[in-house]
Length: 104
Image (cartoon, rainbow, N blue to C red):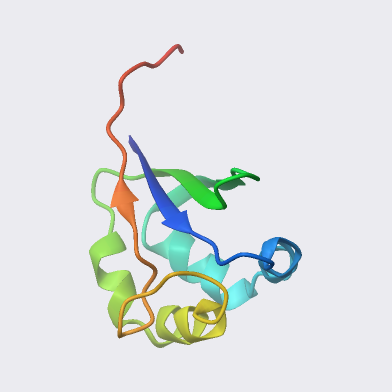
């Protein structure tokens, strides 16, 4: 099991909408993530910078790299594109974070 972390950027004024959309996460998207080997997935918001900090665990034999090709992920990206920084294909602009400390 591997834990990874990354940041994304929310557009100003969309804090509540981002929360609402994730409170109403689609069951088929949740299933797709789990089927790809993703678990214990959390996203945190920095209220001043509007950076979104994501952290998740993934199985050693995960299929996260296949998620961008799935219809449900592409649909989710289109659903979220109006409230966060995205690439031309609507995928969120992300930057990986390097682990510098861990306490188990």
